[in-house]
Image: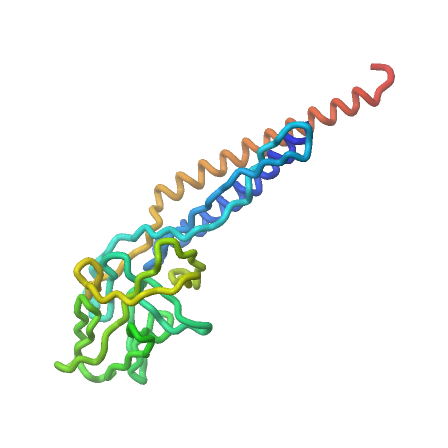
Length: 242
């Protein structure tokens, strides 16, 4: 009987994490380049008692690789990544990778992300343009041309499929494995004047949120019922007149 309480509590811990993850996805349905979080659950088998009992683990958050939809903006400093590549920028503690291609030119000419971090090329060098140099053209390979002069090339990087990703901000990630610069632009590249939206589907995430909420409530009812049964058993066994 007590095992049922622990199993129910482990399920609630797992469901609470799932609810938090879904809520974060819902909050970022309009965040450019955002990749949804998914939770990977595992069953933990305890053999401490006479009979094995299966518990639900709290779960591990995994950043999905699913792409968001691409929307035309007409802004020449917006670039959407075609394929599986990532843009790199110099973060406070090292290189960060993102699919948010909303770029800007700082007053000193540095090409930056919308959050103000320097965008780098395939070698990790920062890119500098002329703030007053006229229109900017960005090719599929990321080559930047301004006033008929090629300024530099935005780096495009491949993150290994088996790499674990840690989130940086809303749309940035840092992998635990080395990345490689993409040199073949037949499948991967940039599309100027477009941005990639969030991969979170609002209707799907809201459906998941309602389903997880109902499961949490059901588990709570199960725990309440088990506690009530245990209480009644104690009262009955403790009353010598019964």
